[in-house]
Length: 391
Image (cartoon, rainbow, N blue to C red; front, side, top):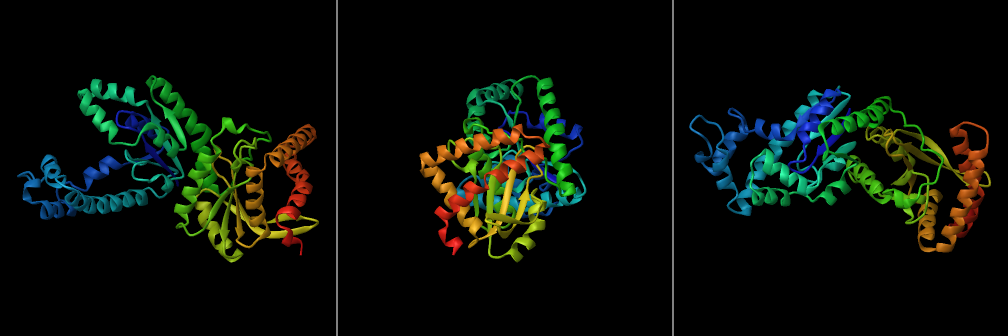
């Protein structure tokens, strides 16, 4: 199952986009509907609310009197915390029931208004933001819901700002134009990213490799991409392992292939083997490979890669004391701090990439040839940065 989180500020049009996703075959789990389900007559939570806040929070027919509950629960922080302590577990458990009911679905979309505010994004393979500028949302709330400006502005201010939402989400869907424009954008997203992602995830296979070309760092958000991927990996593995952003995309200002290189540190290779199925579930299938240390030397590791066509990731699972792990950190730090070495490395990359691109062969063969052509340089750097590895 590909788990997708869907969010957007009040008035952004999440329901419009969620309906489009359903039209393309996704299963929808609506957080607002679940919040209403758990307080319907006959639900255990309703009795608990009456016990905690008094019988006045119920209508004569036994249904929830929402204004009365709000008056009783929001009088101070203690009562609000009491309400949350009752509501959140009930909503969590009911949400889990919905996900379990659709365990065989290819794509499940969880529509959560406060996805970002409640720090929930790491729990999903992909997070979609329905994006509309706050001023446009303000006008929509006034026009479509009849709110006055102050009320609409107050509701918007209580949610995360646009910048925070954009930083937390993987995909931004611009819903500030016409419905037809949004429908076309959602259709493209489904066909070019979501459906291939779901298929690769189900098959346990990596997406095609990134193109062999250098991308200017100013045209990418590698730091943000890495932060989002690392957050998902940490959440999915119980925050048990250290994870580093390494490689060229971790060096500010350095052009690079559009691939986020990460290394996850395990105590031993048995732990790496045991972790492999979980990483595959998170969208990073892998196998046992070796780092090439130069001069014929190798060092075992596990290597995992992305199932998401839209974000290339190389995930190296190494032990803490391995040469590969120590060199990756030291080389990243050297390029970050030493402008001269950074320029030297960039010039070498450009020359070797041009040679690989001009050679005969498939794209994969050219990529492998490019990687191999850098080995002498890495051997030289390893002698400098991890000299004890030659003892």
